[in-house]
Image 1 (tube, rainbow, N blue to C red):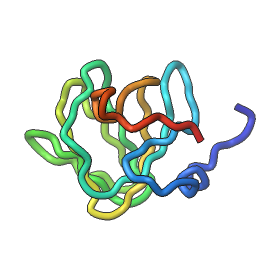
Image 2: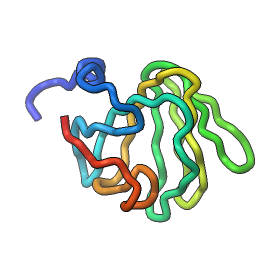
Image 3: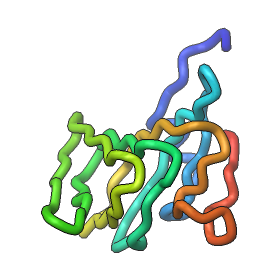
Image 4: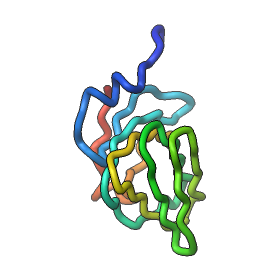
Length: 117
């Protein structure tokens, strides 16, 4: 990588919601941006934690025992095997980091196709 990555520019390149775009990789992990709005689905990741950093907007990470609300500049890590459901009442933009190949739904059969931009 020889140039800085402008995350706002990358986010302006697509409109789809809940469809992460890989903007960089490091040490076997994808660094992704995603636009979200509405409710995703309850899921867990049996092999990895789930990292969320809000760039714009607000998102709730519903857990079975509580809800964690994140605003711009705030992050949360959902531990592996913990069921969660992200919800955004209005469009929000997130930065995600996870091992390359991790399905965003926790299930490869229902996961969004991984796209590099």
